[in-house]
Amino acid sequence: MTKSPFCYFRTSTEIIRLAVMIYVRFPLSLRNVEDLLHERGIDICHESVRTWVDRFDPIFAGKIRTRRASFMRQNTQWQWHLDEVFVKINGVQRYLWRAVDHEGKVLASYVTKTRDKPAVLRFLRKAMKRYGAPKVVITDRLRSCGAAMKEIGNEDRLEVGRHLNNRAENSHLPFRRRERAMSRFRRMGNLQKFASTHALFHNHFNLDRYIIHRSTFKSMRNAALSEWRQLLAA
Image (cartoon, rainbow, N blue to C red):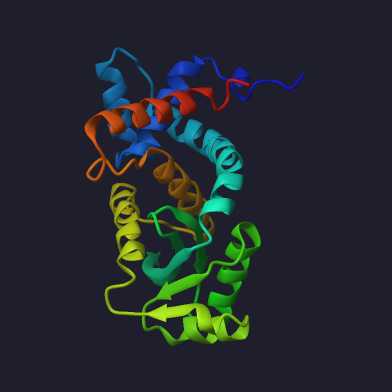
């Protein structure tokens, strides 16, 4: 029988799951999470929160990815939005690529040192290997994207427009808020790990409350919280 990953910690499973959920769901620092839990009568150190997040982030993200992989593969082939965002790591500029589906869900995140054709090719091949080839790919006017689509034989599926790629642009906003709360990043590996897991958590809790009825939003929110609590129950 497989041991529970919580068995090595003295703190209860409910507190660990709550602390991790608060940190990954809201743009808060580790000390903010410590203060919020202290208000609830839970006395922990922010370094404990850091340890729990480092330990359980990949596990929770893997559970979410496994549960939603088949559904996303069947329902995200219509249209992708592809875009990159500039990220500073120790004063050096890097690029975080994102593939977003037609509903605004982040499919894949990939960090590169450049934004030339080889970088776009690596990102596209990784995303298409997991989710399959989309019918339409929308990008900005970056020529590297067009060259990469031509390389893989999907040039006829490429669309370029000034305002067509707003879904990808909007997907960067939650990441920017978290980047400010975390005082930026120091390594590419840390950025890649965070971007991949944060996108999954954002997809899980982002319910588009501004475009759905209040009762529908409440039921979807309860379902998301219930699924979160059951992630490591088995």
